[in-house]
Length: 453
Image (cartoon, rainbow, N blue to C red; front, top):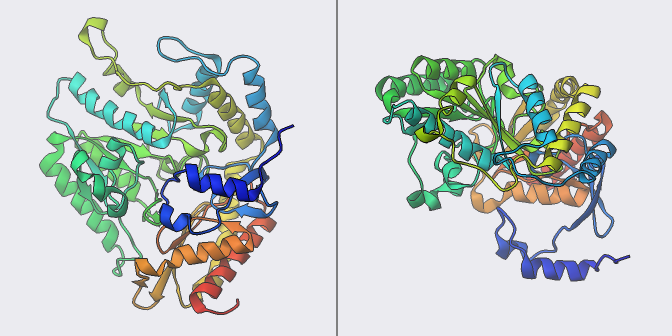
């Protein structure tokens, strides 16, 4: 049996060899790293045997907790058959079975499934699919996209092109294509009731009236815009955006990478307003947080745009080495079975209502400006001045400091600037949720007010 190296040895090699994503390595290397060894339920356990609640679902994707017997068994069983077989010109059993299940549970009208391996690649597929669809129909002028301010759709070049968070995306501007950008309705930053929604819809309608002949598609994070700070759409916004796009013959792409698989209290966020997009991207929770897998679903209409004689060269020339990986598809199937057997979507909806009763105590604190929630997607915004809604300066690192205190107290999360993210595994019990939010509360009070809770 190979023994686990000591913490000191692992920490040294971590700093020597690893480059971590979304991490300023100069800061990181000045501190002792957290090194996870294993997981149990909704907790992660480091190599020093300290337990932490997984308060952000290992970057928003864990569903049933860690080391789930049914999911482990699904992978083991599939391993006994085959680990991988390409989908280029052939198929495999779990990829077919999962495609059928996904068509059954996604909004009606999405009938074709194209596999990839993560949210960003799923978005790349959606963009290329939308663009080529119009080309295949002989409409070459529709080659632009519409995105929303502060959008995040992943980190590959096409996904970054339709992203609109300057901190993440500005440096790559010379590499990118330029979309049209409309405002995302941020009701916390817009004091007049309804003004944020009205501004968004008016901007979109005007743009479509003037430019729809140039636009292939609009891409939207439905109901909740994640990386910008958990911004929740006003009711009716998503449906109206979809209606405007349809009326102007512009395809509607729903990026459900973060919002899908029960996270918002519906299986998919589009269901809140009975919207069927032309193209929908799903990932993260699809395998229960086990293996990298994503899908881009679309309608028969889009599919028919590519269905032609070989010599017409209308094939969708896109693919990935691990497209439709049998292990990923097998665990995804087991994941969906657990959703059904545990009534997980209904549980999330009920837990979300229960959690809302906990936030008034947070909002009484003088530096908690806003709490935004949809299902188990929660953002707690910290501010210098509550009345003026003045944000902390970037250099204050307030979100980072509170998250660091949470870690000391046994809860892992990752801030979005001044917004604390709370996205626990969907399986979390109410006792576990209570302990997690008690840690959050304590950390916020101690760090922002400089005293014990």
